[in-house]
Length: 100
Image (cartoon, rainbow, N blue to C red; front, side, top):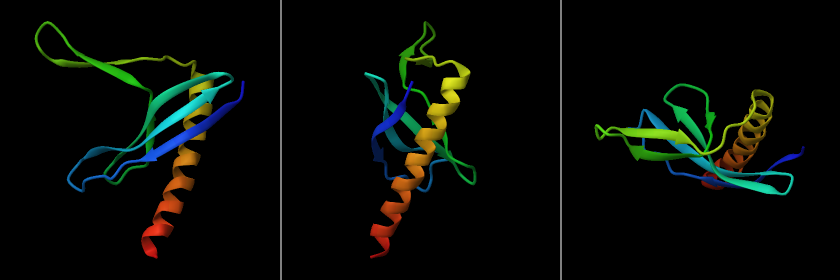
């Protein structure tokens, strides 16, 4: 199955965030599009991908996160690679615009 990044939206980060969202990414699998994968980056570390998720509060009032899609490991690796490559290209284009 072909995996294609169809949209990537860079997010302005705040310097004080230890863990911040760098981009939201929509990915197409054949005829299906899944929205809002996230490129995350912790200070001093490499970016990584989080699958789309929903949040809810449990009975104690604690905020819980639940993935809205679960991908097999081999597919997840391909998706992460496609997303991170697209993120890097988009970031380089964006950095080029800022230097002008």
